[in-house]
Image (cartoon, rainbow, N blue to C red; front, side, top):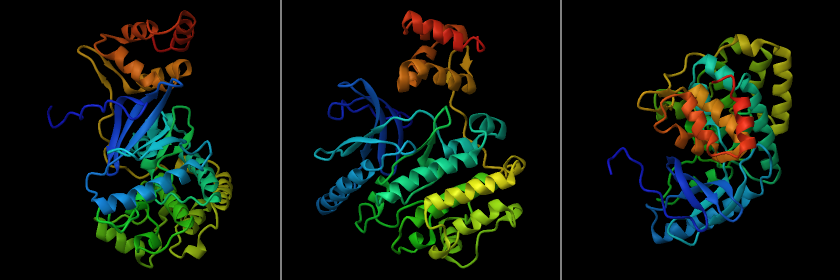
Length: 370
């Protein structure tokens, strides 16, 4: 196996059968899997324990149980649901709702035209996230790592907060995890300073995300981690630039207040203020394009010997197919695309896997693409 290849799929996670790896990060790996008992697609997050000693492992597992149970209490359409977890094996794992779509960070790296086609009004994403935060905070759960990478946007524009409650697993004094938890570019000052935090830390992070949506950069980003933390913990407020003096600027100023007491008291209050500001600005969000973002990584496409399925068409195919087969649509499309020579062949391969009535519905939906 070359260094560029993903490791082999695990045989199973309890009864859950992995299909493919979706991603990897500091805390472990995430797999698309199927629950054979109810024929449901799920996401399985395997928590990395490689660096944990016996004492650290015991502490971590206790925190793991507490946080997963807390996350499971956060029942809201804007929060990824937690279905199950296991901590009695070598690889503790969490079974969660599988959400098709892209992270907000991916969407914000896209060119303006593609971003607008996917989500015409990115500030409306913030409103949905705030509704989810309000539900979680009402049961005492704080995320502590709100950032664009932890916000999923489905092909139909619905928002899902991921890793809700699980982020606190990193808030440990053990050498296994160590250091502060959170992403410095979106972290509240009190969190960066290692002080106690409450739900208003999540609201600061959400304001930082809104700032990036509207102005194209993070509010206190510097040249490296140390510079960012100095700016974050220092007294100087965020530079609102062209939003200074506007209704949206006032929302950002309060949301990004260094003093916790000056921030919004709740996610509901934040959402009410943002909604009013967006109404007051009218078309303002459309005439305030974000500052140039760093060049995005190549957009994943299905590479074929003589034909390349364009990413927008792949996204459209996935969305339409999802109406018929649910979350497994992406897997089916990938298999149908492998080795196809053109779009009609991809569609024909898709149809071969569907029932006759589903074929008619799919072809009708995709008529504009053929």
